[in-house]
Length: 351
Image 1: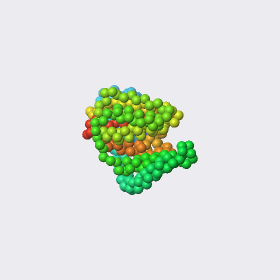
Image 2: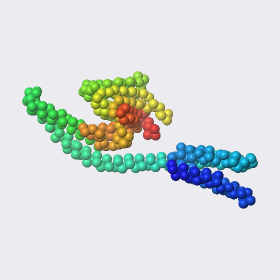
Image 3: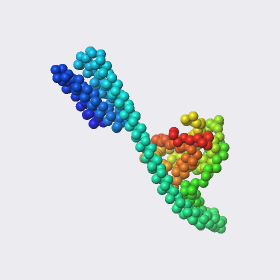
Image 4: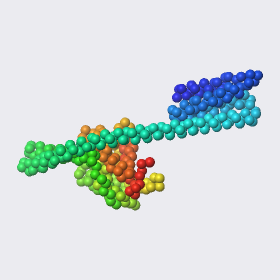
C-alpha cells in the first residue's frame, strides 16, 4: 500500500511539477510520458489487491489529474477529449489487469488444491491398505474380548467391584470396536447402495437414536423439516452415518447445553435441484485455523475423538456428488450444511 501511494504521488507530482515551455515543445511531451507512468501504480494496485485495487488506484489518479486542464487553461476540445480518453484508459487498465490477476490467482489456488487433494489421496491409499489389514487383525480378537467380558459379567452381582471392572472393559472394547469400524470405513469404503430416500425420515431416525441413547444430554434438538422435500437416490445408511456424526459433533460443542436446529430445504444451483440439510448449534464455534483442517483425517480437538468422523462424512457426500459446507463463529456456534443432488447424475462441484 505504501509503495503504491509513493508511486502515485511521484507520478502526480511529475504531472504538475514539470512543464516544458511551448518554445521547447510544450508540456505535451511530459504529459504523454506521465500518462504512461500512471499505468504503473494502477497495475501494482491490481497485482496486490485485484480488481478492487486496480479500479481504486485508477479512480484516485483520475481524481488527482482531473484539474490539470483547468490549471493549464486548456480550451481546445481535441486536447480535452484526449485528457478524458486517457482517464477512461486508466479505468479500463485497472479493470482488465485486476480481472486477469484474479483469474490467475484463482487458477493457481485451484491447481494447488487439486495437487494437495491428489497427494492426500495417494497417501491415504497406501495408508488405507495397511490400516485395513491391521484393523481386520484387531477386530477378530476384540470381538472375543467383548463376548468374554459380557459372559463374565453375569457371574458377579451388580455393584461388586469385579462387575464394575468388567463393565468398564465391555464399554471400552465397544468404543475400540467403533474406532476400528471407522478405520475400515475410511480405508475401504463400500460402494454406495442408492435407493429413493426421504432425507426428512433419515433426520427423524438420527434424532430418535440420539434421544434413545441419551447422547443429547441437556441439548435441545429442534427439527424444522420441509414437508414438501422430494426423495433423492441416496445410500440411506451412509447418509444416516453422516448426519449422526454431525449431530454428535454439535452436541460435543455444547457441554453446558444449547440448541441444535436442523432444517431441510430445496436449493437450486445452475438449473439443478439439491436437497440441503443444515445443522446449526449454539456451541463454542470453530477457529478459522481449525476450520481449514476440519476434513483432514485424524484431525480432532477432542481427547476422545478419532478425527475420522467428518473425514468419512466428507468422502460419503463427495461420492454422492454433493458437498458439505461449514460456517462457524467463535463463541456463537457452527452451521454445517449437507447438499446432495436429487438426481444421481447431478453434481455441485462448481458451487
